Length: 108
Image (cartoon, rainbow, N blue to C red; front, side):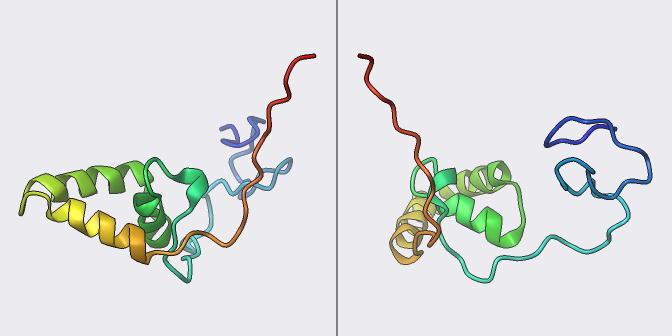
């Protein structure tokens, strides 16, 4: 087995990568820590960050949340999901932690 973060080979008994500290998921029955508040992580946002915020809060994959939101938009009552998304976009705060942005320097 190889580490999913740094790629070095791991032994079968390893619970963490010895190089980067990434958990392997073996031997620990503790669930991933849940985020205390619902907020929009702008570094993971495709549109407004609502689906990424819900995915992080509930510990789900963001793609799964986006697919579920799309299904809720189309199936029960048309455009009910769109209205709920807009309301969440307005109500949910952005993340507090700033994200470093790479700047491009013009060629001389």
